[in-house]
Image: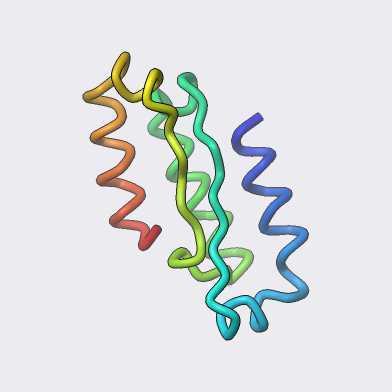
Amino acid sequence: LDAWVLEELLRQLGPVRAALTDASAAFAVNVSQQTLASPEYLTRAQSLLQSARFPATLLSFEIAESVAIGRLPEAERFVASAHELGC
């Protein structure tokens, strides 16, 4: 579901992408516990961002505290990888 949400967000924002960078917009996508444990999600996110030509700086990922605490190593890896993407 998380991948679909990101894909749908990028699809809907595609037509107004240029205006968003000028407006200093920002968007956040929630990350589930399952997604947090999946290294493929960020690879997919990078691919989606590139194909949509969507600035990664406009995107952030939200991880609930309860999820992050329960999976701290995965949360740290996810945050570091998302930062490398520019999010």
